[in-house]
Image 1 (cartoon, rainbow, N blue to C red):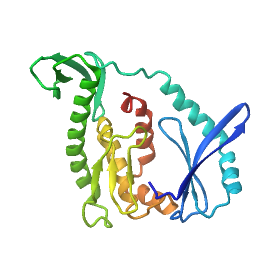
Image 2 (image 1 turned 120 degrees about the vertical axis):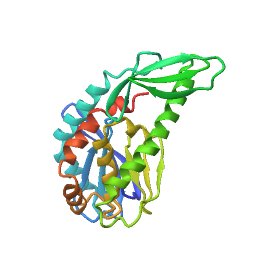
Image 3 (image 1 turned 180 degrees about the vertical axis):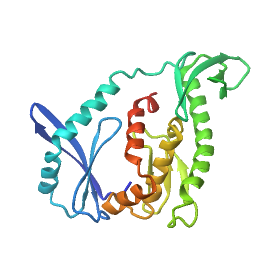
Image 4 (image 1 turned 90 degrees about the horizontal axis):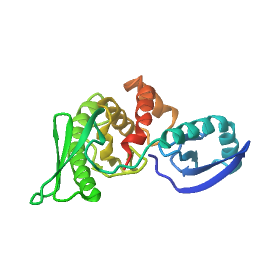
Length: 249
């Protein structure tokens, strides 16, 4: 994501609805238009140049009020059906786009750890404690993510002429983001992304690698994305549609 100078919250009326959004001012943003994003948790984020008058930004956002309202309603509708995990045997888990079942095995003398066994992700734990089981699963996903992301990063970055060496990367559990790229070129990835299909992982990696060339969401950025993954919009939609399951805790 682009470096932001400041973030402010705004709201306006759209019929009987109040639409709230966070405005992110970006000194590095080179285009005059604003970019509107509806996040997987239904938050509305608006990116705008630091020099754009607030009145113009508000006018641009209001023009997209119908689009924003429809997308926020769609996300909230999906989230309404997502129940919190209980971390018990039989619950559904995902890994690389495939569905697995959680199996909890109690072993009083064993430390908590997770491993894959066929169609199951088995967590061996000394006690039936949700927090302990979650911690073991988080550690398993983090280790898998480290291996998968390193492999896919090598594949995705190879055709990119501006990537002379693999960028510095780190893993960080996040509640609404798949990844980000700092102004210094350090890429942060959410280990939970490893739950998604490989093509979705590749899209996020490519998105962040494109930020090494264009550290904004300018037309040049999207043209670069189009050139290296022409179907990225469909892949992004697939990823967004499974966000509630991926981020489910």
